[in-house]
Each structure stands twice: as structure tokens, then as C-alpha cells.
Amino acid sequence: MTYRILVADGETSRSARVVELLRRDGYSVEAVRRLEAGPEDPLPDLLVLDAGFLDPATRQRLTLLRERAPELPLILLKGTGSPDPAPVEGVSEILSSPPDPEFLSRTVRRLSDAAGLRAQTRRQYGLAGLIGTSRPMQSILEDARQMARSQAGAILIRGESGTGKDLLARAIHYESARADRPFVTVMCTALQDTLLENDLFGHEKGAFTDAKGQKRGIFETADGGTIFLNEIGDMSPNLQAKLLQVLDEQTFRRVGGSDDIRVDVRVIAATNCDLEKAIQEGRFRLDLFYRLNIFPLMLPPLRDRRDDIPLFVEHFLQRNARKYRRRYTGLLPGAMAKLQAYRWPGNVRELRNVLERASALCAGTEIREEDLRFWEMGGSPVRRHTVELPPEGVLLEDVEKELVTQALDRTSGNQTQAAALLGISRFRLRCRMKRHGLSARAPRPAPRP
Image 1 (tube, helix red, strand yellow):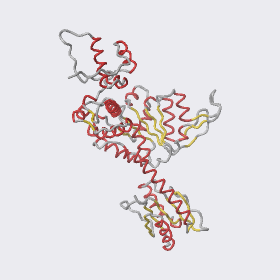
Image 2: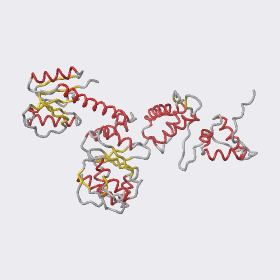
Image 3: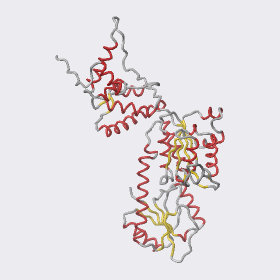
């Protein structure tokens, strides 16, 4: 895609020289005498503006342009001996006018390369990289896109476990003007209260016994970027109060410190717990809930967006093909119908795991219905077939030996795959092989016709 540059300069001869230099480098350049970008006009990738144009009307147009394109880079051209202009938001470089051709070329190339890197990152990690064409997901993505480009300081993502709350949080960051700043994930359940506070806010030297020096916390290192607080419903009330202060005042104090530290951080919080119930039980602050819930996003479970299952299947099969160095042509109709009919208590995460298992163990290039195996709560596999006890009865030891033997035959003696077929660990499989005298053996030969 061609990098588009808009040059706004009242001096025609000077702007013509700049346009000539930039077009020589292969850019698409348009020159105007006044900056008048309407709401329907196409946005440039770079704006080059004469600093002498910075009257109140032009500044107002810049503000409107910045609302439509928060990351639009701006190069100001300042005549030699002219006073420095008043600060302007989003200025990437101030060059002398007329600019040095080589320095102008290097500056524009740097800004163009940065824009290309941001675009590539967004394709990979941004909202465009999230899977979902169903109506519920499209609605979520549209809301997330608006929130990402807004000045929202806090966003709350809710949804069942496995719906992809972490991926949505990361996509919002890379869709925003903060994309070139840090994105830091904090699992609120992973650390004790005091350790989490220390990680978030840092500490001063001597704040506690092992505080040998000053430490910057996550809020300082993520300044200008985004902090993702996963499972915020498990955060202690003490830390909830401090988080509320950061959201309201954009300031905090290190552990053991007395100075307020100001930061510009967007907080994206996520949880799968019932916050309303936690509030009633006194485990979550009502004021923090109101502060976070200004910009809520509710991710739908997979059972409410079954139209997206074929898209996930294609995505995961491509990834599994690279991982296992195999070629998959897809799912047989019965297998796809089975995926569509399942209730998916583990959501997208469970679908990913089911397909990875099927990809690893399927015999051919197509995944069949019998290759798909689901797991209920408690770790018991959902049976694919009903086994009936014959009237005369059986010896359980013989049945177990036969099943282990069949699993080893089907996998050509691969114990890892055979254990997966039986829904047990490799260690438990080896114990059963030893008990039945099947250890270290080749698959039994096929019967003669």
C-alpha cells in the first residue's frame, strides 16, 4: 500500500520542493495551501505542516484530525530564526524550512517503517486477527474497536473461562494509540497480596527487610501502555482500593514511599467470576466495579457463536499442521456435526485442545468423528461407544488387555499415542502393559485371510 503524505504550506514554491523530494522517494504526496480535512476526506499517513500555519483555526482542525487518527505523525517545518511554535500534540519531528533533503528522506522513511510495523503487528495481534464472523462476536469487536481508539482509561472484559479474554485485551492494546508502548499481563491469583502490591507499585529502599534498593513497579514500566489484570475478581480489597486511586487520579505511591508518581496507563481487567455476587459478599468493591464497568465487554461462550466453529477448526488445523508437520484436508461431515452439537463447557480453549488431540492421533489427513474425544468435568472422557456386558459375563482383565493391545496396534506401538487413545497417562499404560505381559513388544501381526 502506498504511503500517503499531505503537505500543508502556504508558500507554493517551498511546498513544491518538499513534494518533489518526497515523490522522488516513491511516496504519494498531495500539497494544499490550507489544512481543511473534512470528516469524510481520506486520511493521510503523514502530515507535513508549515509551523507558521499554526493559528487557532489550524490547531482546531488538527484536533479534529487527531480524533479520527490518533497516531497520525506530524512533521513541522520551521523557518530559520522563527520562534519555536507552541506545543502541538503528536509532533514527530521539527525540521528547518526548507528541509535538508537527506534528513527529510531519513525522517519520512523512519516514520513509514514504524507505520508498517504497527500495521503488521495489528494484523497479527489486533482485532483483525481475532476469529469470529458471528453476530455476537462482530458486535463485541465493533465495541472493542471504539474503546481501543478512545481515551478510556479502564475496560472490563467478562466471560466464561476459555472464551479468549486475554486475546481480546491484547488486541485492544495493539488496536490503540498505545500499541508501541508496553503491554503487561498480571495474573491476580498467582501471587500473595503483598507480593502483588510490590509487583504493581514497586518499593523504596528499606521498605521491608529484603528491600536492598529501589524497585520500579509494573505501573511505572508500563507508563504510556496497557496493564491487563486477569482474574481481577480475586484481587484483595486492599489492592482494589489502591487500584481505584490509580484509575481516578493516575497516581500511586511505591511501597514504603511518600511521593506520588504520575502515570498514563490503561487498565484492562478481566474475570469469569460473578462480580455482583462478590460485591454482595463483600469481596469486591462496589466503587471499583462502577469505575471499571463504564466500558464493559461481555465475551459470548462458544455455544452461543457456533457459526464461528468452522473458522476455529480451519485456524487450529493450520497451526497443528505446522506443529506436527502433517497435512490435514479438514473434517469429515460427521466430525463437523459432532463439534457443532457439543455444548463446549471449556469454550474455545477446549475446542483447541480437542482438535490438537485429534490432529496428533488421526490416521489419515481427514479428521473423523471417532477421532474427536471430549472430556467432562472430573477428567472422565466422554465415551464414543456404548459397551454392553454379554449375558455370560467377561473377565475384566481380558477386556483391559484386549483394549491395550488394540491401542498399541492402532498406533504401531507408540505408547504416547496409545495412552492418549485410552485416556490414561503413559505411566499408567506402561503399568498395564507390564501387568498383561505386553511391554516392549511389536504390534501383533494382522490375521491372515
